[in-house]
Image 1 (cartoon, rainbow over the protein chains, first blue to last red):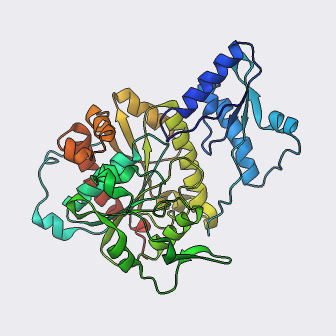
Image 2 (image 1 turned 90 degrees about the vertical axis):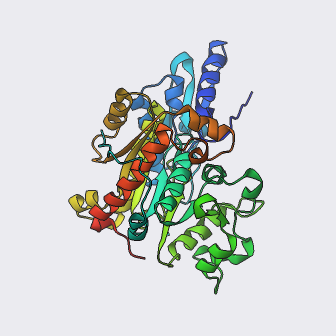
Image 3 (image 1 turned 180 degrees about the vertical axis):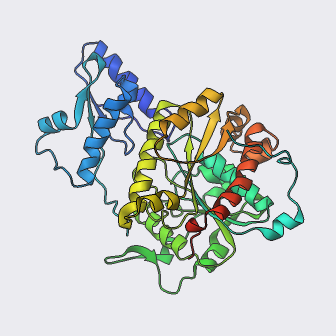
Amino acid sequence: MKIAVVGKGGSGKTTTSGTLARLLAQQGRQVIALDCDSNPNLGLSLGLSLEETERLAAVRQALDDEETEHAPTVTEMLVRFGTTAPDGVRLVVVTKIEEVKPG
Amino acid sequence: MLDSSPDATVQPTASVAQAVRPLRLAMVGKGGVGKSALCGTLARLFARRGHRVLALDVDTMPGLAFSLGLSPDRVGDAGMPEDLAERVPEKGWVLKEGVEVAALVQAHALIAPDGVRFLQLGKLPNRVKPGSTVAFRAVMEDFREEGWTLIGDLAAGTRQPFFGWSDFAEAILLVVEPSAKSTLSARRLAKLAYKTVSADQTDKLNLVKRTPLGIVANKVRSAEDVRRIEQALSGYNLPLLASIPYDPQLAQAEQDYHAPIDVAPNSPAVLALRELAERLEQWVDERPQIRRTL
């Protein structure tokens, strides 16, 4: 199944998503948690460390800074932009690319 | 911690009102940390201190309007008519030729209590348009009428809140609550601020002085909360401008679509914000290198 969580900032999207992902994994499902937020904090709610959460954000940021290239396949994306959280949840940071250059 | 001035609760005098210099401020921070509540309250406080205030909501969520004390049924009108903007090749969304920004504010800003003018940015009436944020950025950059204090409630998150404001704001308030997610987001924003400002800067020392970023700790319940926030942001050399206590009256005001300053004018949080307003006037004056000229 595919679940999306939306809502206003600060209403608890990330906490809800992270906890749902862990609970579904504990039921024996294979779970991929996608962090689509431009401010990716889902790692923290999944139980990852601050350092690992920041590492993933930095890998994603490197794309915007043109220091790295897009993953050519989905599998490679899961590897390069992802990490394994407790209960085997695979977290991937997939914030959409935006044109953010000033001017 | 901050010094608290003994006369912080004294009402502003006429001489204060005459002496005010306009300020340009922006609020950034993670969603839900209280940017809108603080922004709306500060706007009202500056107005009471004699500023002519234009409050700009750059978020597509209409939170600031309520915190200013505008009623929900008026908020839908707080946008700019879309036919005033147009899309120009290579420039994106801009105001149409001949549209005067001052006249636009006159015609389309809502008037909140204490005379605060309010414009909803990032949204045109009845629909959200991605280009309108850019159009409104142009509004802000073109806002040349002197004497206005501008205060912007920027979109939540860390992706693009500084663009268009970094060369403009004299103080950018990084609002942080003592949660892991909020402090992590604040660190990303601090990093982004330095990067944005440093784009064409080589002098590192000067860069630190020129970055008008200061911390506002919000929803603080203990000294430990403040310490945690300062620790998370240590290394960025940012001043702690205010520590706003956690205040259930503010949460209640938000739930009821009311302005904190109307519902709880003497609450600890509003009193702390009053001190912050005074402090901001001083802070900007003490740092001539960040006084922006339009």
